Image (cartoon, rainbow, N blue to C red; front, side):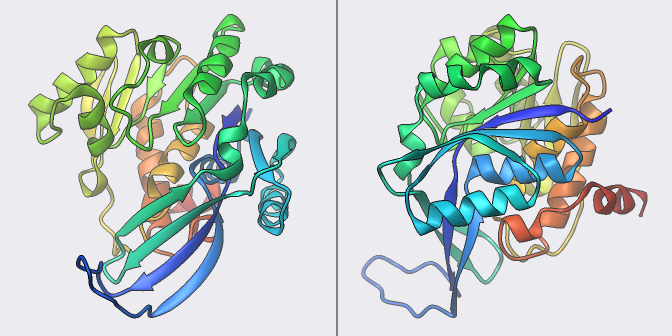
Length: 306
């Protein structure tokens, strides 16, 4: 039986500037190409979840504009339940992605409608939250809204997953108290804990920071080094799959969405789920764009066998 996943999060249109290298201060450079794609951390994670087999519901906001309609159409195309996506008076969120030839990217976010999401929106989606196996949120929407969703989930005995991205140095402890699994990357985790993420010792120190605040499961994603998984029962590094990266956009989002689709609510298969998520992410980075590059479950399962 497939997981039921609720994603509360951001919806952005990605404006991708293809360049050879990042400009130096004061330098003017040429673009090799420009492209536009559906994106946003929340939307990416929802696509990854549904393509890995989860029954996926989205809670978010779009603007009353063509970008909003584009995003709504894209989410519906993948059979995501969009009944809890509201329309704000401000414009749909956007991201400006500087994609260099190596495949690495730098991203500038314009929140737009994403920051119009309120606790009232969450309460209107209570039925979906209570029916879910996992509720997932990031930091591209207001944190008090995520906390409210997590409280409703916990009252119903459901699991919560927090992706604290973009990095927040002042992540509320009250939000962490409502978080079952936290999934930062190494940069985000160092910003939250104040502890650099460089080796096995610092992986453990970072994980213990979250455990002391009541977070049961910690997964720190480490890029080409894979991820570090920590619970009471397990503390180990899960290796990455070596591939040629074309575009790292949505790599972390694919990991989180895919994980939520295959993880057991009792977290018993956390290492196996992280391995599956890592393989899904390795497929994503081999293609351009966010939505177009996120793989289906069958492709991930096939890749795991190779």
